[in-house]
Length: 193
Image (cartoon, rainbow, N blue to C red):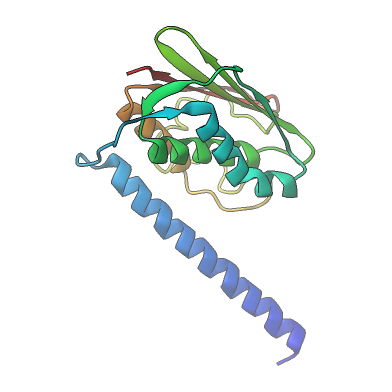
């Protein structure tokens, strides 16, 4: 067996194993967030610090694609009663999607605004976008527009569903606006509880 061929096959096995583990972890998370017994541990947290941690967590993937994350946050701290672990997971899912479906050398803008009752976060990408016919379906469990993203990575259609379920548990909303080849904007609104 030639060494080059062996190495190629071992890499295929490694990638398949990593995908299988990731898939199982996603299924476990999905089962948890859709369970009737799924609860949140609400605590007063500083929101922009949490969001900065999420950005830091995804920065390696963004940097590998030469994607710039542009932040537009209020200068004053924003205290909100949330389950920080779960909201972080939702934001990671959304930011990861924005990175996955964006071309290299593009920007993703994260805007945070507040009013007296809500905090609104917009994740705006310059990616491939979603057609008007499809946009209503993307929040459905296991729905995928395309089985692969722009980097030819497999998609299973649970990231947006997981994020939406977490946001709903916080009495919030998640909305998506998009156009083909014009990018997408995902908006999360969370009430100050």
